[in-house]
Length: 115
Length: 118
Image (tube, rainbow over all chains, first blue to last red; front, side, top):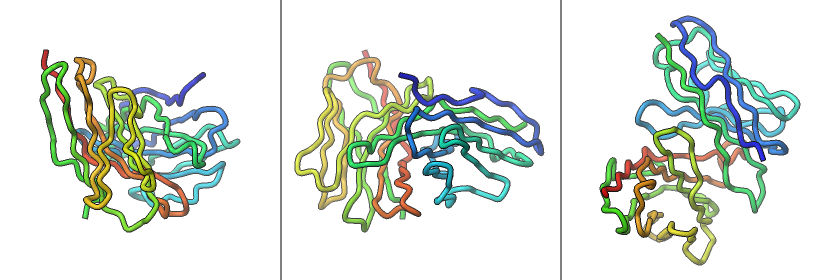
């Protein structure tokens, strides 16, 4: 079956521009997570969706970051007025929370470069 | 304090030998889960193994085993019979039961870069 997909795979943007990153989770997965991985670092949690609602936005680094999820499926992470420190790989993961489904399935990531 | 600590930035192992990657964690939750993920140079995150805090036995998955020492709060990954394809970054992660708003997000360590030598 299809895994988690993300687009674009690479994005180069100029400082100050807005960008949208897309995540298409595994069909039927109700939970969706966004993480950020800066160069040489571990993953940093950004936001969690259960269905279309985002009960946990605690990891968003600033109000320039926002995300939405529609139809309990596709999610978009938007970064407004991008800064050079936003350069990172943005990873999306999904799962169906439950005692038998602890594993999060990750997408291939979007590499964002802000010039 | 860091919730997940991986003290080995880089490790080398001879092909066919076993290697242990260290991970210590910090939580006050009685219910939590520990994960290991592999990230090859291509960038994808590959799930390797999971250990629940109430699991009595150490988890094993093929050549991977997790040496879980609850009192020491350590969850070391053991890879037996290393292969060249094992060269990658390895991340230890924790899921706590009482993460914000029930999100069960993973908290990751900084990773260990494993290089397998022919």
